Image 1 (tube, rainbow, N blue to C red):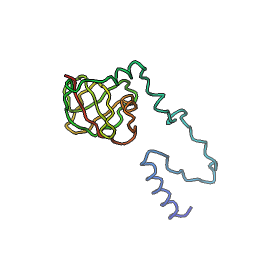
Image 2 (image 1 turned 90 degrees about the horizontal axis):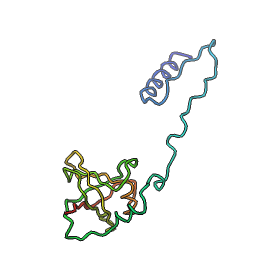
Image 3 (image 1 turned 180 degrees about the vertical axis):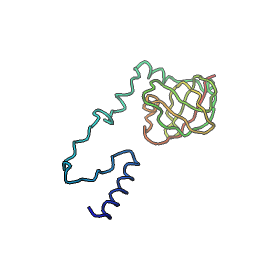
Image 4 (image 1 turned 135 degrees about the horizontal axis):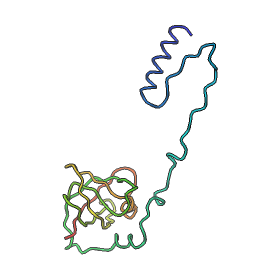
Length: 156
C-alpha cells in the first residue's frame, strides 16, 4: 500500500471507529491471513413486536378505562403534546408536569374526541409534554408513533 492509501485508510478507520459501530480496518501484510472471521451477531434483538402483543390490559381494565365520567366530576388541567411512554410500563397512565402528585384523571384525544380514564403521574419539568401508556393510546385509537394533542383532566 502506498503512503496516500495508508493515510486514507487510517483517516476513514478513525472516523468509523468513533461511531462505535465497527473497528478500523487492519492493514494487511503478506504474512497475515487474507480472510477475516465472521462478526458475532447478537440474536433476537430489534425484532419487531406488534403493539397488541405488548398491550396486556384485560377486558375488565379496558372497560373501566372507557367508563364514562360526569363532566361535573372533571377539572381541566390543560392540554399537552403527548407521545408514547415506555411500553414496558403497563396500565392506563399519563406522565405529566400538570400534576404534582399521583391522582386519577381522564384524557381526551383532541383530534377525535375519544377519552380514557388514566392515572396521572407527576413528571419533572415544566413543559407541556406528556407520556401516555401503550394501553391508553391504543384505547384512544391514537397513533403510536409521533405526537398527539390531548386534554388532561383530574377527577374531583
